Length: 335
Image 1 (cartoon, helix red, strand yellow):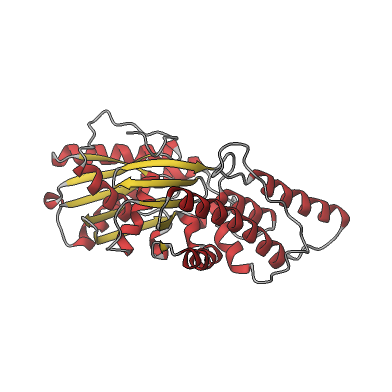
Image 2 (tube, one colour; image 1 turned 180 degrees about the vertical axis):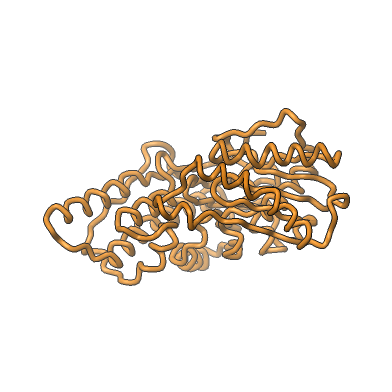
């Protein structure tokens, strides 16, 4: 089954052609350079750039896959969650394309797609397993019971881990995308120099809270600036990264032990973080847990993961009509 998939939930316009778990093409048009001027994604600009790019990116993906539009069996598209204006561009383009080709339209949840990125890299992986999905907008621990059956058991109470990284990086004057830049410059470990907190969520035992850590960093930098003191940026970056990784790893491993999972996956943009990967590998080895994560190129937003998850959604009977709408928020277990 050949699926053309579309991803436009934030600032990447991506179109891919897939055959089950096989990637025939995966084209990504990024807006990073433009949003870097503002230190973060500007939703209005993102929507406009998706509108300008999507048709050409789609044509390029079809050409790169070595197929024609007539050979496509279905269209998959990210419809939730994400920036509503950006999502609408992809959803409406996908609806028009599916209608013109008279083939099925498959709605795909963005977080399900990130989990499916693991299937691209790890051909042997199959449910059930536990997955930590962590990005700029989401931090969630999910029991993946089947390819289209998900049960969230822990999530962030406030800010996502990626947002904490990004806002910290911006506060330190680091280049957007902040989380990636912070990971690169976090080269000096001196965790006693900046005694940052470990916020705890008042909600469930596997839930997270990163707002307090973000605020602590902002206040620390602001106070130092007021006093004319210099911040040791590599040390502070390393300390923030250590705190975030501590919280992510502690809660995820506790959930794995409590729920009896011996297979664990990472997903989402922050799954590319070098420290998170290194430490999670070490801890999983100690606990006898098998760890999987995607190749770096599939950690961020891309349409290949949408196509792979779209295949399983289609097999489960999840298709949509011309009334499909985008949604800024939607739980991973929505159906």
